[in-house]
Amino acid sequence: GAGLAGATPGSPAMLSLLAAQARCRETSALIDLAGAAVDRALLEEQQAEETAALIPSEAVVTYELALAKYLAPESARAQRELAQAAREAVTVNLDLQVTRAYAGALAAERMASLAQAAAGRADDQVKLANDLLGAGMAAWKDVLDAEAARAKAMAGVVSADKGLQLARLGLARLTGQSVAGLGTLDQSSLAAGLVSITVDEAVAVAARDRYEAIAAGSQVELAQRNLVTIYGMSTGAFGQYADGDANLKRLCEETGGRVEYPLQQVYTDVSGYLSTP
Image (cartoon, rainbow, N blue to C red):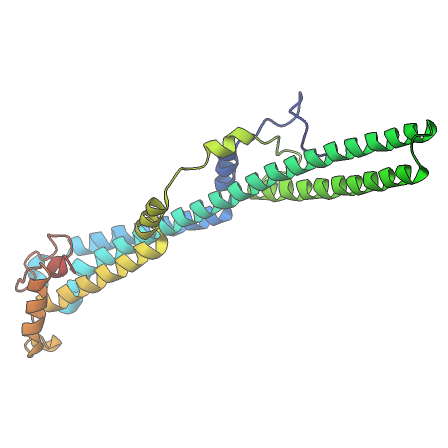
């Protein structure tokens, strides 16, 4: 079947799984788009930090100035981290797609090889049946049965070859190559490219590194920082002199935060007041 022969002079070199993943990343428009989003987020973060640096701490007397001084840089940082996480998610997803396609192509090669072997054995059976018929040791029906089995085996070869061609076409498209330029696949690289990980480790990594987890964490932190900013301003315009002020102060203290009036370097620790929600 196609793709079963080893590399010959002038033919494409062997393609490992890691090389296939690298080629996919190099040619993927999705990676380029995700990278552009990261570059834009980095620029916005830089602009937010520069703007905040121009506002003296003693000049922060309104909520709008507090947002520009303290919250906007953190919001820009969170957006940059989300963009980086999104780019990483795209990369991981593409690597997974290539791994599946690579494993599928190897399996298709194996199926094509088995189909060819089965067709060879069926052809031998037809020859044997004809020899036995000539020697008077078999009936014509035995020859017909052998030929029917050979026809079935040849149909299996056609089906396996078609599956192999489709599998290699899918892998070629993922890696930005033509099928002819794909080269032979390295069975040993498949195992080498897989990471050994337990279920508990996979859950822990997913909870920490997945885009959704990072996005949720960023939203919680920004909401807490916004609450800190409003509370730190301690102005009647935001109702902080109402009865609820005591409850908010108690909540901050119970969750391990600290109360400062007004914004006395409230961001010097990790999350301000609500550092351990």
